[in-house]
Each structure stands twice: as C-alpha cells, then as structure tokens.
Length: 317
Length: 51
Image (tube, rainbow over all chains, first blue to last red; front, side, top):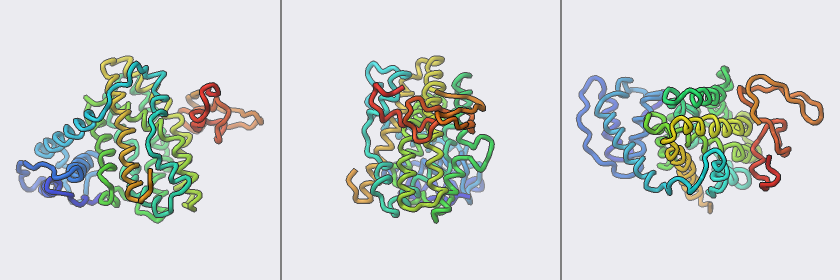
C-alpha cells in the first residue's frame, strides 16, 4: 500500500489532514491557496491517487468526498489553464494524419535518453529511475480511464494498445510489472509511494496532467493526443536508455524493460495516431484542437522535466 | 507496416519470426536493429530513404 507523501505547503497539509479524517470526522471547507506549484502539485497528485491505488491509512471513501473533489477540480482548472496559456495552439495548416510524426520529430527538447546513453553516471540514472517510477509503476493506467469515453473504432484500438501494455494477458509481461522488476534488480524499492517525496514538481505535473486528461470526459481529445506524442517519443529514446543502462552495468531486467519498449512503442505510436487519434477526430472533429493540445502538453512537460533533471545534476542540457 | 494477430514473418536470411504481440510493426526501411520488427530507425533516415 502506498504511504501518503509529505506535504509541501499549507494546501497539501490540509488535504493530508482531510484524507485522514474521512469518514469518521467531517471534512471542513479547505479555503487555502497553494503556496507554490509544489504544494499544488503534490496535493493534486494525492487526490488523483485516490482513484488509482489509494493510500495506507486513507479510507477509500475519500475519493468521492465532495470537498476533496472540489479541491481537486480547482487544482485541475489551474493546471489546465497554465498549460493552455503556454500552448502555442494548433500548428498552422497541419494535418493530423500526415504531419503529426514530423511535428513531434521537429520538437527539439533536451534529451535525457541521449545523456543516459552516453554520459550519465550510475547515480544520475538511479535518480532518473526513481522519479520516473512515479509514472511507470502505474504505466498505462491514466490512459485506461479514456476507454469508455471513445467512439467504437478508437475504443477498439485503444483497448488493443492497452492489451499490449498490460502484458497481452500475462501479468509477467505487464509493463508496470516489468519496470518494478527492473527497479528491484537495480536495488531500488518497487513501490509507488517510495520516491514521490523526491519527485520534483515537473514530474508531479506530468503525472497530474495525464490523470486529469484521463479522468475528465471533456479532455478525452487531449488524453489520446498525449498518448500519441508519448508513444511517438518512446521507441528511439528507449533504445538509447537501454544502451546507457547496459553501458553502466544495470541488470538485464532493467535493460529489458526499455528494450521491450523499443519494439512495443514502434507499434503503439502508429496505432495511437492512426487508429485512435485520427479515428476519434473523424467521428468528433471538434476534438482535433484538443488532440494537438494533449500532444503538445506531453512534449512540453517532458522538456521541463528534462531541464529540471539536468539542472539538478549540474549538467548542461 | 502493421500486422494484427498471429503471423510468421520470414526475413532475408530465411529465418522465421513469429509475432508475439496483438499488433506488430514490420520494418519497411530496412535499417531496424531489431529486424523484422520496426524499432523506429526510419525516423533517423533522410526523407528520401524513408518508406
């Protein structure tokens, strides 16, 4: 079971107290602004986690406690507003089906994968694995929320993709499980809560955006756009990561996780774009802008994470 | 090229590779390091060499 993370300010402190209060004590109005993006991000991450694995010492009923839902929505509104404000809009004249992969390729961000491949130290890679574990230990789950919200063709394709993520019927091949096994073999703790406290705000925001896109029907376009960008930026970086991990002598299970993704995501990026995003937009053309928005958010948030990690290691991006 | 379901792909050397995924991507650019499966290498090729 996951332990509650440490609060990072007055709002997350109040949320933590409220989580522990349910259901025995009444949850009073939480009329606090977050003190920082860290405070907001960890509060939102905790509130989202109630819909996934929950927390030790927190009653499952907290997930739908009205005051906590209200706080969650406010934090999501803030996050969405900040993302939309940064977003440069749909690329001029771009056609989703034919231009998406080039658009992704043209996005020039700092590459953690290249750093791991060639120069990273073992310590830096362990650091990266710890903070990435916040996502990977529940890999694919945030996208699974979207399935019931899609029309038939896109729904069938998303299930097809997720079926692969979840191990093609074999728990031993389930991607989150592969990551956990890799962490264990590398001497890291494979529990979701283990490294949340050291996750920088950029990592929390990546996860919060994903959860927000998946948990709100209104944002289903963004959810599938995010998925397409995510998959399209995975295959080659996974190859670099696998090579770097090998260079540094990491165990086979950890290398193996990334090797699996080289092939798996070469498939997924095609399915995600053509059979999910393009299919969804064909049925619901008004969602096209959100597809581009979600894709952009994926790349933008990853850039910010990369900059943050390079800064923390004293490495120029 | 995407294949759905169970297939056996025969490579240039005559070796047989069975699919293991619900959907598999077969290399069309010729440069994958994981042939016959796509590994994304086509993205690194100049436009005229891409499938």
